[in-house]
Image 1 (cartoon, rainbow, N blue to C red):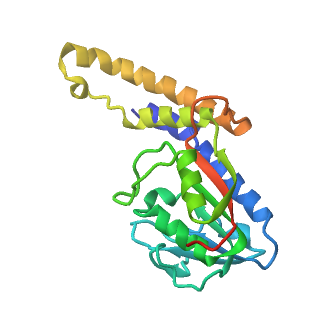
Image 2: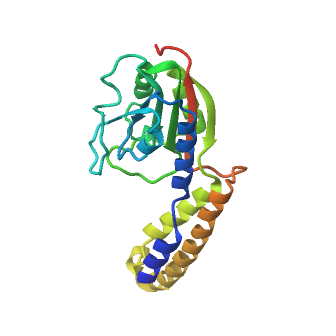
Image 3: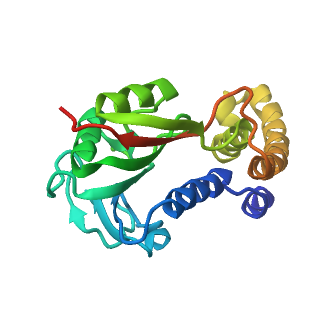
Length: 242
């Protein structure tokens, strides 16, 4: 099993992370110097460095057992302790799925964003449960459109964050990590013992194919069919939320 672990570690990387970095870099590049930016659900504040030319603040409830960055507002995103229309821009990465009341939070983000201000949101469409028990929803493009429009935003774009090759790479990587290799996991007996070597061979093939697909996904996003792993939403506040 050391061979599988070594191959996995050496060959597979997360192409979604490459696209996530690029989406945030593009958003940051469009922000004028001195603008006030809120990183909502900031976690480790991994994108703080992109906003060195702006004024950066962060918000998170800090309830997950993980490493956090320096959080400006430790609070529930349903009730941010700031005045109306404080921020020029908001980044909202990989947080929407963790909210029990996403519509309430989006109305609150609309409240604190200036009219004409922009928000970048990224959220998974296909991803395993994580940061339990704070993992509640997955969103289609139509779910995003409804929630943002209802909160007083104009959708500027809804895009696949990665292509279908990235989604396939993730699915194969998940199989490598989660498929058991014990004969008892397949009912034991002769069939269980016969299946186990096949599962091991399949995992090696999955690693090689996933490695090729994640590299292809970085080179070119295939969006003609299949589905993304994440959506990215760019929206502009058009009016004060009711």
